[in-house]
Length: 185
Image 1 (cartoon, rainbow, N blue to C red):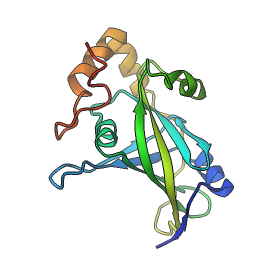
Image 2 (cartoon, rainbow, N blue to C red):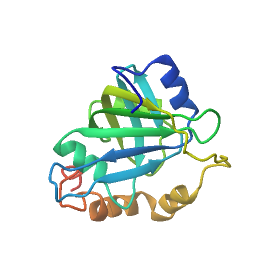
Image 3 (cartoon, rainbow, N blue to C red):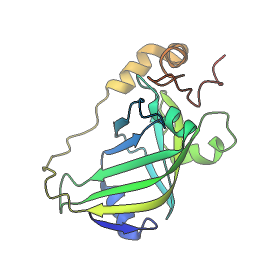
Image 4 (spheres, one colour):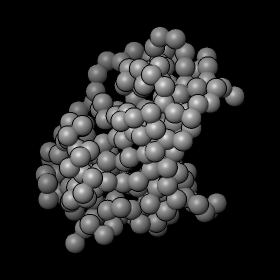
C-alpha cells in the first residue's frame, strides 16, 4: 500500500527532479468515458511548492488531460525509479490548464523551456503523495531525448500547429471540451 503524505517532502522533490520521464493520468466522470494515461519527458515538470506542481504540455494527437481536468479537476502523476534504488511516487490532486494569453501564463512560462509545440501548462494542487516500493520496476538506461516531436512541429510550422490543434485538440475522445475549445477562432 505504501506510505502517504499530505505534501511533497524534500526527498520527494529530489526524486522527482532526477526522473527523465513521468506519467499523467486523468479520467472523465462518466463510467462510460475513457481513462487517459500519458508518458511525458523533455524536462517539462516543475515542483513549485510542497503542494503545487506544473508541467509544460506540447501538442499531441489528443488533449485528454485538459478535457478531464476542465470537467472534474482530478489528476494523478506517477514517477518510477528506472535506475538506482526502487521507488514509485504518485502525486494526487486537482488540476487546471493555463494556455497562452491567460493571466497566469506570464508567471508560469518562464519556468519552462518553451518549444514551438507548447500548447498549455497543466498546473496541479497536490493533496496527497504516495510512495511505494517499486520492486518490480525494471532497470532502464536513459540514452537521450527523442527529437521527433520537435521535427514534427517544425515541419507543421506555427500555422500548421494551430490547424492541427483545431482539428485534434479541442475535444476529448469522449467529446468533452478542452481548455483550448474557446481559444481557437
